Length: 486
Ligand code: SF4
Image (tube, rainbow, N blue to C red):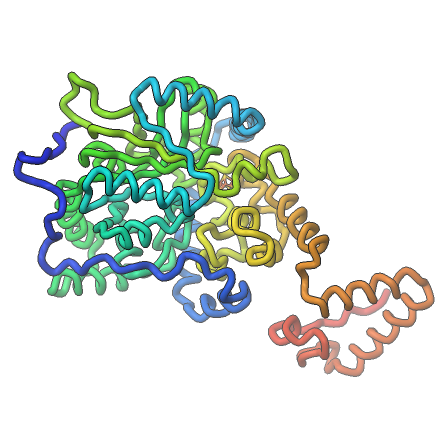
Protein backbone atom coordinates (compact mmCIF):
# COMPACT_ATOMS: atom_id res chain seq x y z
CA UNK A 1 0.00 0.00 0.00
CA UNK A 2 1.45 3.32 -0.94
CA UNK A 3 -0.85 5.82 0.77
CA UNK A 4 -1.03 6.39 4.47
CA UNK A 5 -4.50 6.81 5.92
CA UNK A 6 -5.13 10.29 7.28
CA UNK A 7 -5.77 10.17 11.01
CA UNK A 8 -7.60 12.61 13.21
CA UNK A 9 -5.24 15.41 14.10
CA UNK A 10 -3.17 14.94 10.96
CA UNK A 11 -4.96 17.62 9.01
CA UNK A 12 -7.66 15.78 7.06
CA UNK A 13 -10.62 14.63 9.07
CA UNK A 14 -14.06 13.35 8.19
CA UNK A 15 -16.97 15.61 7.43
CA UNK A 16 -15.29 18.18 5.18
CA UNK A 17 -17.42 19.21 2.21
CA UNK A 18 -16.74 17.85 -1.25
CA UNK A 19 -15.24 20.27 -3.82
CA UNK A 20 -17.24 23.34 -4.83
CA UNK A 21 -19.80 22.59 -7.50
CA UNK A 22 -20.23 18.96 -6.63
CA UNK A 23 -23.88 18.28 -6.26
CA UNK A 24 -24.74 16.39 -3.13
CA UNK A 25 -25.30 12.78 -4.21
CA UNK A 26 -28.98 12.28 -4.78
CA UNK A 27 -31.20 9.75 -3.06
CA UNK A 28 -31.87 6.84 -5.37
CA UNK A 29 -35.45 6.06 -6.12
CA UNK A 30 -36.80 3.04 -4.25
CA UNK A 31 -34.70 0.03 -5.12
CA UNK A 32 -37.74 -2.14 -5.47
CA UNK A 33 -40.35 -1.66 -8.21
CA UNK A 34 -41.76 -5.16 -7.98
CA UNK A 35 -44.92 -4.39 -6.06
CA UNK A 36 -45.88 -1.21 -7.91
CA UNK A 37 -45.35 -2.18 -11.58
CA UNK A 38 -45.37 -5.33 -13.70
CA UNK A 39 -42.48 -6.67 -15.73
CA UNK A 40 -44.43 -5.88 -18.90
CA UNK A 41 -44.86 -2.23 -17.86
CA UNK A 42 -41.22 -1.85 -16.96
CA UNK A 43 -40.09 -3.60 -20.14
CA UNK A 44 -42.34 -1.37 -22.23
CA UNK A 45 -40.93 1.73 -20.58
CA UNK A 46 -37.34 0.62 -21.21
CA UNK A 47 -38.05 -0.26 -24.82
CA UNK A 48 -38.87 3.41 -25.39
CA UNK A 49 -35.18 4.21 -24.97
CA UNK A 50 -33.84 3.00 -28.35
CA UNK A 51 -30.26 4.01 -27.59
CA UNK A 52 -30.32 1.77 -24.54
CA UNK A 53 -30.73 -1.33 -26.72
CA UNK A 54 -27.84 -0.30 -28.95
CA UNK A 55 -25.65 0.49 -25.95
CA UNK A 56 -26.41 -2.85 -24.30
CA UNK A 57 -25.85 -4.79 -27.54
CA UNK A 58 -22.52 -3.07 -28.19
CA UNK A 59 -21.22 -3.55 -24.66
CA UNK A 60 -22.38 -7.13 -24.22
CA UNK A 61 -21.20 -8.24 -27.68
CA UNK A 62 -17.78 -6.83 -26.88
CA UNK A 63 -17.64 -8.65 -23.52
CA UNK A 64 -18.79 -11.98 -24.96
CA UNK A 65 -16.18 -11.74 -27.73
CA UNK A 66 -13.48 -10.92 -25.18
CA UNK A 67 -14.59 -13.91 -23.10
CA UNK A 68 -14.28 -16.25 -26.07
CA UNK A 69 -10.81 -14.92 -26.91
CA UNK A 70 -9.74 -15.13 -23.27
CA UNK A 71 -10.31 -18.88 -23.08
CA UNK A 72 -9.30 -19.77 -26.62
CA UNK A 73 -6.91 -22.72 -26.66
CA UNK A 74 -7.64 -23.62 -23.02
CA UNK A 75 -9.73 -26.46 -21.65
CA UNK A 76 -12.42 -24.01 -20.67
CA UNK A 77 -15.05 -26.65 -20.04
CA UNK A 78 -12.80 -28.57 -17.64
CA UNK A 79 -12.17 -25.34 -15.70
CA UNK A 80 -15.91 -24.63 -15.53
CA UNK A 81 -16.54 -28.18 -14.36
CA UNK A 82 -13.96 -27.81 -11.59
CA UNK A 83 -15.53 -24.48 -10.58
CA UNK A 84 -18.96 -26.11 -10.47
CA UNK A 85 -17.57 -28.83 -8.22
CA UNK A 86 -15.95 -26.33 -5.84
CA UNK A 87 -19.06 -24.19 -5.57
CA UNK A 88 -21.37 -27.19 -5.13
CA UNK A 89 -19.15 -28.55 -2.36
CA UNK A 90 -18.90 -25.17 -0.61
CA UNK A 91 -22.66 -24.61 -0.67
CA UNK A 92 -23.51 -28.18 0.34
CA UNK A 93 -21.28 -27.68 3.40
CA UNK A 94 -22.04 -24.02 3.97
CA UNK A 95 -22.74 -24.10 7.75
CA UNK A 96 -19.41 -25.85 8.48
CA UNK A 97 -17.38 -23.55 6.21
CA UNK A 98 -19.13 -20.51 7.62
CA UNK A 99 -18.18 -21.55 11.15
CA UNK A 100 -14.58 -22.14 10.07
CA UNK A 101 -14.43 -18.75 8.36
CA UNK A 102 -15.84 -16.95 11.40
CA UNK A 103 -13.32 -18.62 13.76
CA UNK A 104 -10.41 -17.70 11.51
CA UNK A 105 -11.66 -14.15 10.89
CA UNK A 106 -12.16 -13.49 14.60
CA UNK A 107 -8.68 -14.87 15.32
CA UNK A 108 -7.44 -12.17 12.92
CA UNK A 109 -9.24 -9.47 14.90
CA UNK A 110 -12.08 -9.02 12.42
CA UNK A 111 -15.42 -8.25 14.08
CA UNK A 112 -18.07 -10.48 12.51
CA UNK A 113 -21.78 -9.65 12.48
CA UNK A 114 -24.69 -11.74 11.21
CA UNK A 115 -27.65 -10.14 9.48
CA UNK A 116 -30.67 -12.38 9.00
CA UNK A 117 -32.37 -9.95 6.64
CA UNK A 118 -32.04 -6.62 4.90
CA UNK A 119 -33.38 -4.56 7.81
CA UNK A 120 -30.91 -6.11 10.25
CA UNK A 121 -28.03 -5.58 7.82
CA UNK A 122 -28.95 -1.90 7.44
CA UNK A 123 -29.18 -1.48 11.22
CA UNK A 124 -25.83 -3.18 11.78
CA UNK A 125 -23.92 -1.15 9.17
CA UNK A 126 -25.49 2.14 10.28
CA UNK A 127 -24.73 1.24 13.91
CA UNK A 128 -21.04 0.59 13.19
CA UNK A 129 -20.84 3.95 11.39
CA UNK A 130 -22.50 5.92 14.16
CA UNK A 131 -20.45 4.12 16.86
CA UNK A 132 -17.37 5.23 14.95
CA UNK A 133 -18.63 8.83 15.00
CA UNK A 134 -18.57 8.85 11.22
CA UNK A 135 -19.73 11.74 9.08
CA UNK A 136 -18.70 10.50 5.62
CA UNK A 137 -18.74 7.01 4.13
CA UNK A 138 -17.08 5.96 0.89
CA UNK A 139 -18.33 2.83 -0.84
CA UNK A 140 -16.88 0.53 -3.43
CA UNK A 141 -19.19 -1.45 -5.67
CA UNK A 142 -21.36 -3.93 -3.76
CA UNK A 143 -24.46 -5.70 -5.05
CA UNK A 144 -25.24 -6.83 -1.50
CA UNK A 145 -25.51 -3.17 -0.51
CA UNK A 146 -27.93 -2.67 -3.41
CA UNK A 147 -29.96 -5.63 -2.09
CA UNK A 148 -30.41 -3.96 1.28
CA UNK A 149 -30.81 -0.39 -0.11
CA UNK A 150 -27.96 0.66 2.15
CA UNK A 151 -27.36 4.17 0.84
CA UNK A 152 -30.80 5.45 1.81
CA UNK A 153 -30.46 3.93 5.29
CA UNK A 154 -27.08 5.59 5.84
CA UNK A 155 -28.30 8.93 4.51
CA UNK A 156 -31.31 8.70 6.81
CA UNK A 157 -28.83 8.17 9.66
CA UNK A 158 -27.26 11.52 8.74
CA UNK A 159 -24.22 10.17 6.90
CA UNK A 160 -22.73 11.54 3.72
CA UNK A 161 -22.39 8.54 1.36
CA UNK A 162 -20.17 8.63 -1.73
CA UNK A 163 -20.04 5.81 -4.27
CA UNK A 164 -16.48 5.55 -5.60
CA UNK A 165 -16.74 3.03 -8.44
CA UNK A 166 -17.00 5.34 -11.45
CA UNK A 167 -20.15 3.72 -12.81
CA UNK A 168 -21.78 3.61 -9.38
CA UNK A 169 -20.78 7.22 -8.81
CA UNK A 170 -22.57 8.26 -12.02
CA UNK A 171 -25.60 6.21 -11.06
CA UNK A 172 -25.69 7.80 -7.61
CA UNK A 173 -25.27 11.35 -8.86
CA UNK A 174 -28.05 10.79 -11.42
CA UNK A 175 -30.38 9.40 -8.74
CA UNK A 176 -30.46 6.24 -10.84
CA UNK A 177 -29.76 2.56 -10.21
CA UNK A 178 -27.23 0.12 -11.68
CA UNK A 179 -28.58 -1.98 -14.55
CA UNK A 180 -25.94 -4.70 -14.76
CA UNK A 181 -23.99 -6.70 -12.17
CA UNK A 182 -20.61 -5.69 -13.59
CA UNK A 183 -21.33 -2.55 -15.63
CA UNK A 184 -23.73 -0.31 -13.65
CA UNK A 185 -24.17 2.33 -16.38
CA UNK A 186 -24.54 0.03 -19.34
CA UNK A 187 -27.81 1.84 -20.07
CA UNK A 188 -26.32 5.36 -20.10
CA UNK A 189 -24.56 7.23 -22.88
CA UNK A 190 -21.22 9.03 -22.72
CA UNK A 191 -23.16 12.19 -23.58
CA UNK A 192 -25.33 11.81 -20.49
CA UNK A 193 -22.21 11.41 -18.33
CA UNK A 194 -20.66 14.49 -19.91
CA UNK A 195 -23.80 16.51 -19.19
CA UNK A 196 -23.87 15.33 -15.59
CA UNK A 197 -20.22 16.08 -14.93
CA UNK A 198 -20.45 19.44 -16.71
CA UNK A 199 -23.33 20.43 -14.43
CA UNK A 200 -21.31 19.37 -11.40
CA UNK A 201 -18.21 21.18 -12.64
CA UNK A 202 -20.12 24.34 -13.56
CA UNK A 203 -18.43 24.37 -16.99
CA UNK A 204 -18.70 22.44 -20.26
CA UNK A 205 -16.47 19.38 -20.15
CA UNK A 206 -15.43 17.60 -23.36
CA UNK A 207 -16.94 14.20 -24.24
CA UNK A 208 -13.57 12.64 -23.69
CA UNK A 209 -13.39 9.62 -21.36
CA UNK A 210 -10.00 10.69 -19.97
CA UNK A 211 -11.19 14.22 -19.16
CA UNK A 212 -14.43 12.97 -17.61
CA UNK A 213 -12.64 10.35 -15.54
CA UNK A 214 -10.10 12.92 -14.36
CA UNK A 215 -12.91 15.18 -13.21
CA UNK A 216 -14.47 12.36 -11.16
CA UNK A 217 -11.09 11.28 -9.82
CA UNK A 218 -10.39 14.72 -8.38
CA UNK A 219 -13.54 14.78 -6.26
CA UNK A 220 -13.35 11.12 -5.34
CA UNK A 221 -9.78 11.50 -4.06
CA UNK A 222 -11.04 14.19 -1.72
CA UNK A 223 -13.88 11.94 -0.60
CA UNK A 224 -11.45 9.10 0.16
CA UNK A 225 -9.20 11.37 2.18
CA UNK A 226 -12.05 12.74 4.27
CA UNK A 227 -14.05 9.56 4.83
CA UNK A 228 -14.30 7.93 8.23
CA UNK A 229 -15.72 4.60 7.04
CA UNK A 230 -15.16 2.57 3.89
CA UNK A 231 -17.79 0.03 2.86
CA UNK A 232 -17.02 -2.71 0.37
CA UNK A 233 -18.58 -5.95 -0.74
CA UNK A 234 -16.61 -9.15 -1.07
CA UNK A 235 -16.28 -11.54 -4.02
CA UNK A 236 -15.15 -14.51 -1.94
CA UNK A 237 -14.65 -15.52 1.69
CA UNK A 238 -11.84 -18.03 2.27
CA UNK A 239 -12.90 -20.48 4.98
CA UNK A 240 -9.42 -21.81 5.83
CA UNK A 241 -7.93 -18.33 6.38
CA UNK A 242 -10.79 -16.03 7.41
CA UNK A 243 -9.98 -13.64 4.55
CA UNK A 244 -12.18 -11.54 2.27
CA UNK A 245 -11.25 -11.37 -1.42
CA UNK A 246 -12.15 -8.29 -3.42
CA UNK A 247 -11.83 -7.97 -7.19
CA UNK A 248 -11.83 -4.48 -8.75
CA UNK A 249 -10.52 -2.65 -11.78
CA UNK A 250 -10.36 0.96 -10.64
CA UNK A 251 -8.31 0.95 -7.46
CA UNK A 252 -11.23 2.42 -5.56
CA UNK A 253 -11.68 -0.87 -3.70
CA UNK A 254 -8.19 -0.61 -2.22
CA UNK A 255 -8.66 3.01 -1.23
CA UNK A 256 -12.07 2.24 0.33
CA UNK A 257 -10.71 -0.63 2.37
CA UNK A 258 -7.44 0.93 3.47
CA UNK A 259 -7.74 4.73 3.82
CA UNK A 260 -10.71 5.29 6.19
CA UNK A 261 -10.20 4.33 9.82
CA UNK A 262 -13.05 1.78 9.74
CA UNK A 263 -13.67 -0.78 7.02
CA UNK A 264 -16.96 -2.68 6.73
CA UNK A 265 -17.33 -5.53 4.23
CA UNK A 266 -20.93 -6.53 3.52
CA UNK A 267 -20.92 -10.03 2.06
CA UNK A 268 -23.56 -12.65 1.28
CA UNK A 269 -23.02 -15.87 3.21
CA UNK A 270 -22.84 -17.90 0.00
CA UNK A 271 -19.54 -16.32 -1.06
CA UNK A 272 -17.50 -18.97 0.77
CA UNK A 273 -14.71 -20.98 -0.79
CA UNK A 274 -13.07 -23.72 1.25
CA UNK A 275 -9.44 -22.97 0.35
CA UNK A 276 -7.31 -20.12 -0.91
CA UNK A 277 -6.12 -22.39 -3.73
CA UNK A 278 -9.72 -22.46 -5.02
CA UNK A 279 -9.09 -18.91 -6.24
CA UNK A 280 -6.84 -20.40 -8.94
CA UNK A 281 -10.00 -21.80 -10.51
CA UNK A 282 -12.62 -19.20 -9.61
CA UNK A 283 -10.71 -15.97 -10.23
CA UNK A 284 -9.90 -16.58 -13.92
CA UNK A 285 -13.51 -17.56 -14.49
CA UNK A 286 -14.96 -14.57 -12.63
CA UNK A 287 -12.77 -12.07 -14.45
CA UNK A 288 -12.87 -13.85 -17.81
CA UNK A 289 -16.66 -14.20 -17.82
CA UNK A 290 -17.21 -10.77 -16.25
CA UNK A 291 -15.03 -8.60 -18.47
CA UNK A 292 -13.00 -10.88 -20.72
CA UNK A 293 -9.82 -10.01 -18.83
CA UNK A 294 -7.17 -12.55 -17.85
CA UNK A 295 -7.22 -11.00 -14.40
CA UNK A 296 -8.65 -7.74 -13.03
CA UNK A 297 -6.32 -4.86 -12.24
CA UNK A 298 -6.64 -5.35 -8.48
CA UNK A 299 -7.24 -8.51 -6.49
CA UNK A 300 -7.16 -7.69 -2.77
CA UNK A 301 -7.01 -10.36 -0.09
CA UNK A 302 -8.12 -8.62 3.09
CA UNK A 303 -7.12 -10.21 6.36
CA UNK A 304 -8.02 -7.76 9.10
CA UNK A 305 -7.31 -4.31 10.45
CA UNK A 306 -3.89 -2.65 10.48
CA UNK A 307 -1.44 -4.54 12.71
CA UNK A 308 0.60 -2.87 15.45
CA UNK A 309 3.69 -2.68 13.26
CA UNK A 310 1.92 -1.87 9.99
CA UNK A 311 1.85 1.75 8.78
CA UNK A 312 -1.30 1.44 6.65
CA UNK A 313 -4.82 0.10 6.85
CA UNK A 314 -7.97 0.67 8.87
CA UNK A 315 -8.06 0.61 12.66
CA UNK A 316 -11.12 -1.65 12.64
CA UNK A 317 -12.41 -4.20 10.17
CA UNK A 318 -15.98 -5.46 10.38
CA UNK A 319 -17.64 -8.06 8.20
CA UNK A 320 -21.45 -8.14 8.03
CA UNK A 321 -22.58 -11.53 6.74
CA UNK A 322 -25.90 -11.21 4.94
CA UNK A 323 -28.37 -14.08 4.82
CA UNK A 324 -31.29 -12.26 3.16
CA UNK A 325 -33.07 -15.43 2.01
CA UNK A 326 -29.97 -17.47 1.18
CA UNK A 327 -30.07 -20.08 3.94
CA UNK A 328 -33.70 -20.90 3.02
CA UNK A 329 -32.41 -22.24 -0.31
CA UNK A 330 -29.98 -24.73 1.23
CA UNK A 331 -30.88 -28.34 0.54
CA UNK A 332 -33.80 -27.36 -1.70
CA UNK A 333 -34.68 -27.39 -5.39
CA UNK A 334 -33.07 -23.99 -5.97
CA UNK A 335 -29.83 -24.44 -4.00
CA UNK A 336 -27.77 -24.13 -7.18
CA UNK A 337 -28.74 -20.46 -7.42
CA UNK A 338 -26.31 -19.96 -4.51
CA UNK A 339 -23.40 -21.11 -6.70
CA UNK A 340 -23.54 -17.81 -8.59
CA UNK A 341 -20.33 -15.74 -8.53
CA UNK A 342 -22.02 -12.61 -10.00
CA UNK A 343 -20.01 -12.43 -13.21
CA UNK A 344 -22.94 -11.07 -15.23
CA UNK A 345 -22.24 -13.30 -18.25
CA UNK A 346 -25.77 -14.71 -18.35
CA UNK A 347 -27.12 -11.17 -18.68
CA UNK A 348 -24.84 -10.50 -21.64
CA UNK A 349 -26.24 -13.35 -23.72
CA UNK A 350 -29.87 -13.24 -22.64
CA UNK A 351 -32.09 -12.13 -25.58
CA UNK A 352 -34.63 -10.67 -23.16
CA UNK A 353 -32.12 -8.71 -21.07
CA UNK A 354 -30.46 -7.39 -24.22
CA UNK A 355 -33.76 -5.81 -25.28
CA UNK A 356 -35.24 -4.54 -22.03
CA UNK A 357 -32.16 -3.89 -19.84
CA UNK A 358 -31.70 -4.48 -16.14
CA UNK A 359 -34.25 -2.04 -14.71
CA UNK A 360 -37.12 -3.97 -16.27
CA UNK A 361 -36.50 -6.76 -13.75
CA UNK A 362 -37.66 -4.43 -10.99
CA UNK A 363 -35.04 -5.16 -8.35
CA UNK A 364 -31.27 -5.44 -8.06
CA UNK A 365 -30.43 -8.30 -10.41
CA UNK A 366 -31.37 -8.49 -14.08
CA UNK A 367 -31.20 -11.16 -16.76
CA UNK A 368 -31.54 -14.88 -16.08
CA UNK A 369 -29.89 -14.79 -12.66
CA UNK A 370 -32.20 -11.90 -11.74
CA UNK A 371 -35.23 -13.85 -12.90
CA UNK A 372 -34.11 -16.65 -10.57
CA UNK A 373 -32.85 -14.73 -7.53
CA UNK A 374 -35.56 -12.08 -7.36
CA UNK A 375 -38.51 -14.43 -6.65
CA UNK A 376 -36.31 -16.50 -4.33
CA UNK A 377 -35.11 -13.50 -2.30
CA UNK A 378 -38.11 -11.18 -2.65
CA UNK A 379 -40.97 -13.65 -2.80
CA UNK A 380 -43.01 -15.32 -5.48
CA UNK A 381 -45.91 -12.89 -5.18
CA UNK A 382 -43.96 -9.93 -6.55
CA UNK A 383 -41.03 -11.52 -8.39
CA UNK A 384 -42.61 -14.75 -9.64
CA UNK A 385 -43.59 -13.35 -13.03
CA UNK A 386 -39.89 -12.95 -13.88
CA UNK A 387 -39.60 -16.69 -14.50
CA UNK A 388 -41.54 -15.91 -17.69
CA UNK A 389 -39.12 -13.14 -18.69
CA UNK A 390 -37.06 -15.62 -20.63
CA UNK A 391 -37.13 -17.44 -23.94
CA UNK A 392 -35.70 -20.61 -22.35
CA UNK A 393 -33.10 -20.64 -25.13
CA UNK A 394 -30.45 -22.00 -22.76
CA UNK A 395 -27.74 -19.46 -23.73
CA UNK A 396 -27.34 -18.61 -20.04
CA UNK A 397 -26.63 -22.25 -19.13
CA UNK A 398 -23.99 -22.45 -21.84
CA UNK A 399 -22.09 -19.39 -20.69
CA UNK A 400 -22.32 -19.70 -16.89
CA UNK A 401 -18.79 -20.25 -15.53
CA UNK A 402 -20.05 -22.44 -12.69
CA UNK A 403 -22.59 -24.28 -14.85
CA UNK A 404 -25.72 -23.25 -13.01
CA UNK A 405 -28.70 -24.82 -14.84
CA UNK A 406 -30.55 -21.49 -15.02
CA UNK A 407 -32.98 -22.87 -17.58
CA UNK A 408 -34.06 -25.68 -15.18
CA UNK A 409 -34.31 -23.27 -12.26
CA UNK A 410 -36.54 -20.98 -14.32
CA UNK A 411 -38.78 -23.89 -15.24
CA UNK A 412 -38.90 -24.91 -11.58
CA UNK A 413 -39.96 -21.40 -10.63
CA UNK A 414 -42.68 -21.49 -13.27
CA UNK A 415 -43.92 -24.78 -11.82
CA UNK A 416 -43.90 -23.27 -8.34
CA UNK A 417 -45.87 -20.28 -9.60
CA UNK A 418 -48.49 -22.56 -11.09
CA UNK A 419 -48.61 -24.69 -7.93
CA UNK A 420 -49.07 -21.58 -5.82
CA UNK A 421 -51.84 -20.43 -8.15
CA UNK A 422 -49.97 -17.21 -8.75
CA UNK A 423 -50.99 -17.04 -12.41
CA UNK A 424 -54.03 -14.84 -13.24
CA UNK A 425 -57.42 -16.58 -12.82
CA UNK A 426 -58.28 -16.11 -16.53
CA UNK A 427 -55.02 -17.83 -17.53
CA UNK A 428 -55.62 -20.74 -15.16
CA UNK A 429 -59.20 -21.24 -16.40
CA UNK A 430 -58.10 -21.08 -20.04
CA UNK A 431 -55.33 -23.65 -19.62
CA UNK A 432 -57.50 -25.95 -17.47
CA UNK A 433 -60.23 -25.91 -20.16
CA UNK A 434 -57.67 -26.47 -22.90
CA UNK A 435 -56.14 -29.41 -21.02
CA UNK A 436 -59.59 -30.91 -20.45
CA UNK A 437 -60.63 -30.56 -24.08
CA UNK A 438 -57.46 -32.03 -25.55
CA UNK A 439 -57.73 -35.16 -23.46
CA UNK A 440 -60.53 -36.26 -25.79
CA UNK A 441 -59.65 -37.00 -29.45
CA UNK A 442 -63.00 -35.72 -30.70
CA UNK A 443 -62.70 -32.41 -28.89
CA UNK A 444 -59.06 -32.14 -29.94
CA UNK A 445 -59.99 -32.54 -33.62
CA UNK A 446 -62.97 -30.22 -33.29
CA UNK A 447 -61.01 -27.39 -31.61
CA UNK A 448 -57.99 -27.59 -33.90
CA UNK A 449 -60.31 -27.73 -36.92
CA UNK A 450 -62.21 -24.68 -35.68
CA UNK A 451 -58.94 -22.83 -35.03
CA UNK A 452 -57.71 -23.61 -38.56
CA UNK A 453 -60.96 -22.43 -40.07
CA UNK A 454 -60.92 -19.23 -37.98
CA UNK A 455 -57.33 -18.46 -38.94
CA UNK A 456 -58.05 -19.09 -42.63
CA UNK A 457 -60.91 -16.58 -42.43
CA UNK A 458 -58.75 -14.00 -40.68
CA UNK A 459 -55.81 -14.42 -43.07
CA UNK A 460 -54.95 -12.44 -46.15
CA UNK A 461 -52.56 -14.16 -48.55
CA UNK A 462 -51.77 -16.70 -45.84
CA UNK A 463 -50.82 -14.09 -43.22
CA UNK A 464 -52.87 -13.08 -40.18
CA UNK A 465 -51.74 -9.57 -39.30
CA UNK A 466 -54.61 -8.36 -37.12
CA UNK A 467 -55.13 -8.80 -33.38
CA UNK A 468 -56.91 -12.03 -32.56
CA UNK A 469 -59.54 -12.19 -29.81
CA UNK A 470 -58.05 -13.62 -26.61
CA UNK A 471 -54.52 -13.32 -28.05
CA UNK A 472 -54.45 -9.55 -28.33
CA UNK A 473 -51.18 -8.93 -26.53
CA UNK A 474 -49.40 -11.68 -28.44
CA UNK A 475 -50.72 -10.83 -31.89
CA UNK A 476 -50.53 -7.03 -31.53
CA UNK A 477 -46.87 -7.12 -32.53
CA UNK A 478 -46.67 -10.42 -34.41
CA UNK A 479 -48.03 -11.74 -37.70
CA UNK A 480 -49.07 -15.36 -38.00
CA UNK A 481 -47.89 -16.97 -41.20
CA UNK A 482 -50.09 -19.98 -41.98
CA UNK A 483 -48.21 -23.04 -43.19
CA UNK A 484 -49.53 -25.56 -45.69
CA UNK A 485 -50.53 -28.99 -44.50
CA UNK A 486 -48.46 -31.65 -46.23
S1 SF4 B 1 -25.66 -17.25 -12.94
FE1 SF4 B 1 -23.67 -17.85 -13.77
S2 SF4 B 1 -23.42 -16.50 -15.56
FE2 SF4 B 1 -25.07 -15.60 -14.32
S3 SF4 B 1 -24.05 -14.09 -13.01
FE3 SF4 B 1 -24.14 -16.03 -11.86
S4 SF4 B 1 -22.22 -17.06 -12.27
FE4 SF4 B 1 -22.43 -15.48 -13.82
